[in-house]
Image 1 (tube, rainbow, N blue to C red):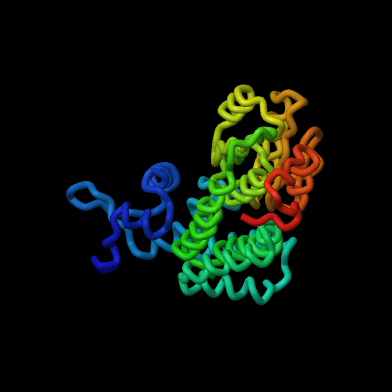
Image 2 (tube, rainbow, N blue to C red):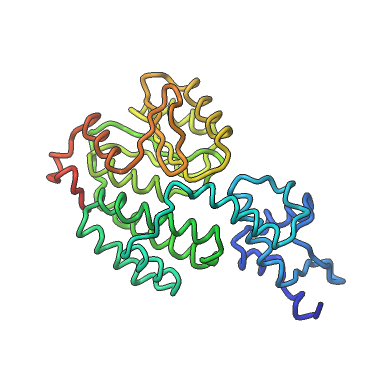
Length: 313
C-alpha cells in the first residue's frame, strides 16, 4: 500500500463518511474498525479504502446491526448485508418513483439544492402543506433513504438533500407560529433516533391549527421526555419514528412511556417505522390523518383563515 493511500487523518475520515470522530475512535478501540496505522507522532492514518468500509458499516448499524457483529466483515460483505436488508426494510413501497420524484432525485444526484428548494416551494404552492408532505415529501424522503442505503447517493448528497428539506421547513415554520391559546403538544423522537424531518412537518401542521408546539427534538432520553411531559402537561406527546429494524426495542420504549405517563395525555406515533397496535398508543399513518386529528382535538383552524385540507404557509 502506497503512502498516498494512507494519508487520511481521523478528522478527514469523519468528514468523508459522516461519522463523528469520537464514534470512529470508539469503533476502532472496541471492534477493530476502521483499521489505522500510527505515525511516529502517534497520530492515526487511514487508507482511502476505509471510507467505503465505514460508510457501509454505518448503513448496517443504522439498520439495526450491532457494531460487534460487523468487526470481521469485509467491505463487500457489509455491502451485501445492507443490500439484503434493504429489500426487507423498503419492501412496502416497491413501486418505481413517480416522474416528479425522479426529477427531485436527479437534483440530489447533481447536488442542485437550489432546484430542489424551488421544487419544494412549487409543491407547497400547488398542493398546500398537507399535500406537500403526504404526496411529495413522503415518497421523496423514502427514495432518498433507499438511495443512501443502496449506495446510489453519497453521504454528501444525502446530507445536502436532508438539510435542504429541513431548512425549507424550519424557515417557513416560525412565520406561522403566533401567540396561540390552543392545546399544547410535545414533539420528540425516541432516544436512539436523530432524524427530525418528520417532527418538523408535524410542527408545521399543528402550528397552522393553532396548537402550542413544544419541540423537544431528537434523541432525548426517556427521563427527559417524562420530565418534559410532567412539566408541560400537554394534550399529547407525539413521537416520530423513521424506518428501523429493531421493532422489539422501540415497542419496549413506547410501552415504558405509556406506563409512566398519565392516561389523560395521548401518546401518538407516526413515521415510516411507527409500530401499530400498541395498547394506549395511537398511530397516525399520514399527514392527512394528523390534520384530521388536529381538527378534532383543537379545531381552531378557522381562526387563521385556512381550509384544513389545503393548509398553506
